[in-house]
Image (cartoon, rainbow over all chains, first blue to last red):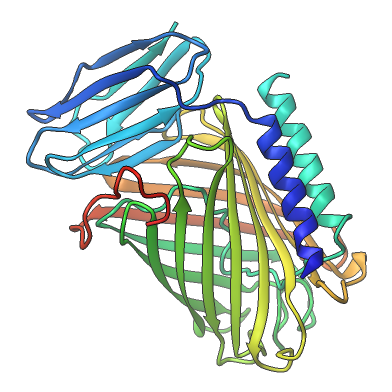
Length: 111
Length: 283
């Protein structure tokens, strides 16, 4: 088993060392109600990690998802979740409810 | 260091670590499962039906070569795994697989079953490296496809997001519990992928699969299997996702060309358990 440790530890160390993005103190709030996200657009500072507080104020389950940010999480009715987002380069990033195609897509704008 | 350069350096170092340092790994590569597992598990209360398919477009003409672990040759073999997954909690999912195979000139046949649990640790982005785990039991009762009757598979899951890139690594540790090789130790293999999040419906990636055999008695390099798969993947409407690619074998022991295409359909059906506690990191 000792042979298993070497590659795993090396891989872990390398990937950890090259990493950097950490959760930050900045929290932006996003509510889901009346079958849409409010606000539809979130503006955040570029190159700084932040967190999104997603509140599902509706009576239907949703899946908060962002393809570009590689984040997805089910949020039940009345539930609140926190999504950690690493520092972003200046760009627009999508978010949407993956359970309902008819919910308008929102955008996180880092600038 | 720029994200792409960091990714490249990471992948090269990890492959070096997996292939050179240890002299472990080479678990039997699973042709029913050309899939790299991410940190994120299926959403709580969601069911996913997935069809994992691969065709050996150019393979070996004798059994027990390339992706064949039984008496039938790999050439023109079609593999289909039907996977049903359910998100138990925000961090744990469970799945069952039905493996089917269609040898050249024959109909589809039962080839085995698998059951697994997969989980994620901590919140995504909480640690510099997102970590998860995977434990699977594989049952084979059809020696012509695989002469090992029961196998245990363990995978640590590692993921790192760099801007629009994601790097995923699944070292694979496999042990035969019942079958001719039950007295042997663990085998080692790997599944890894680099993905670029370009468009939701269409994004490119490169996947790597392979194995080096028993950890204690590594296969000679020429007999090992290593593959590179350029892939495209994306999400379509109504919860449909796809991943399509063509793999090239890098060693004489590999099948020269494999084509894979995976399709999955997700639907929320209702959660058994409540949301993960804010302070919980394991369930």
